[in-house]
Image 1 (tube, one colour):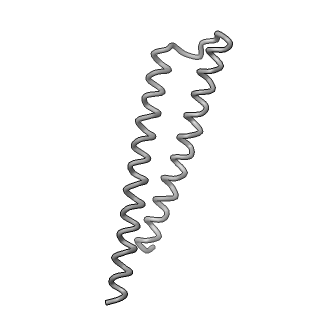
Image 2 (tube, helix red, strand yellow):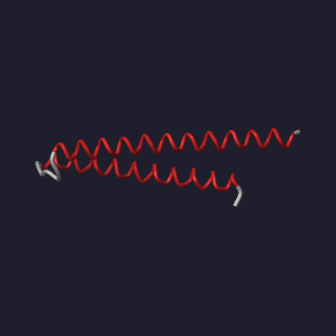
Image 3 (cartoon, rainbow, N blue to C red):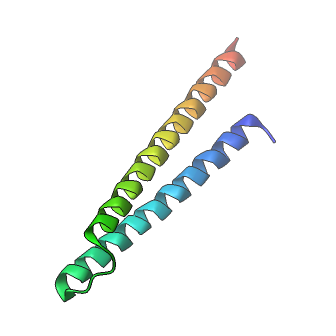
Length: 86
C-alpha cells in the first residue's frame, strides 16, 4: 500500500473519530440538559465535569492529530509534485 493511501486512510479514520467524538459531546450535553430540566441526576456534578473535560481533551487531541495528518499529506503531495517536474 502506498504512503499516500495510508495517509488518506489515517485522515479518514481521524475524521470518523472526530465525528464520533462530536456525537458523544452532543449526547452528553443532552443528558446534562435533561437532568437540569427534569431534576434527575445521571451522575454527580463532579462526574459530569470530569467526563466533559475528558471529552474536550480527546477532541483537542483528535483535532490536532487530524491537522497534523492533513498537513503532512499536503506537504507530501507538494513534494511529489515538485519531484515530478524535475
